[in-house]
Image (cartoon, rainbow, N blue to C red; front, side, top):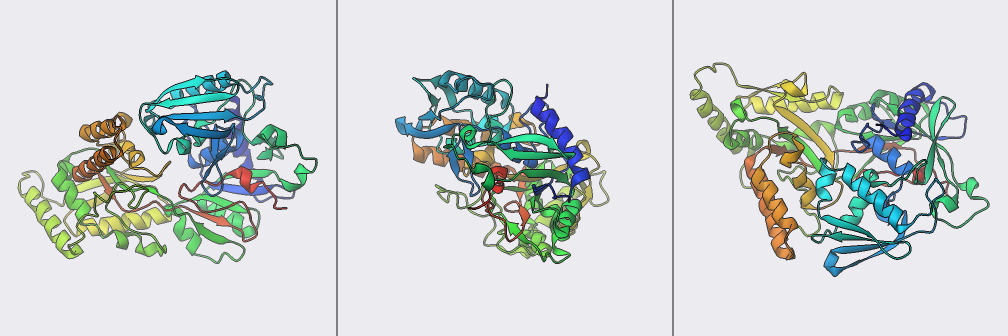
Length: 492
């Protein structure tokens, strides 16, 4: 059953569409390119916009700031012991919104509930090493792990791990309906774990939120009614490039994550790893995004973003010593050999891909179709997920480690083709105490996933925002996450 905040948020954002562009109430207007900014019924499958709103109204033990760094939230300090297997958090002084004390035991119950609710999701897989949450003396809780998780703080800062108890929310902001729109207002400092301040209201502003299409958001920005547009992806990039943005700038996040094609089912010209490899080797990835003129974007054939902290370099880029012409010649020969053995195939084999209809997606689809046609494969658009052979993957990483990337293809998620052997290796890595051995197992898992060719990478995902030049509280970061509470602060 949806929470009260979920229902309020859905109705409020729907009303916000009518009020977009009207900022005479002093609010700071932020638009999400996200027609589905809501909290789903189960409370954990959030859109990108929904994650931002959840982080504003509900706090976890820690949070992310505008630079993407972990900062205190319900816990004001912490330390790590037992070689990274025990995290100890000291809770800040304060109460839950219902007036009950923010005690270690109440936080333990709330955190266990949040972790339990994430079962069956990729975040749930990431949290698998958590074996116990203990309430210690006073306001201290302890999280015990089956193996070291260096990125645990980053995981605990995710919006889906915000904690709640009873009525009210724990975040730095409160969601209100005003003037037929959804407005987030900052709570008093003492409710945010900060010292009392008499003039605190002079340095914060309400944030009015809108869920809009890309066209509506960009027009609202150019007309002056919107201060910040968040959630831009490849699909809307051509809309930004078509006109001058005299009162604002395009800000690209140095995001890491997945951007490529996931094979949904193994049939026809996708039935074997060798055939799927033909599609992968035929792609000129840099040419795919050349029409978008995105400076600094680096194509990659790797599943895991290259150069992550601790990357041992055991998995190289594929086909680095071969030209694209050589690769396409080999790929075309492989497809032709397969066709020769198919009695019922006369025309070019066809595969269907599910992709959005935004202008940028149209360009990407045309580029993919043109390149695969060179090796004798026709790409068409799927009308639904059920009809799709290929799915576009465009996902931001939650933390900078190979396990996040590998978990996205876990067989338990049922997102498309998967490899049980890869899941087994990831599980082995979790149980491994030796850091070098764990690193090797994860590299082996990446190599196996790569060779299965169930995912064809393009490179890192694209995320952009529109931000006026006089706006503070915004900074590009790896997670493309921009806290609304930071945008609400007026610099002194």
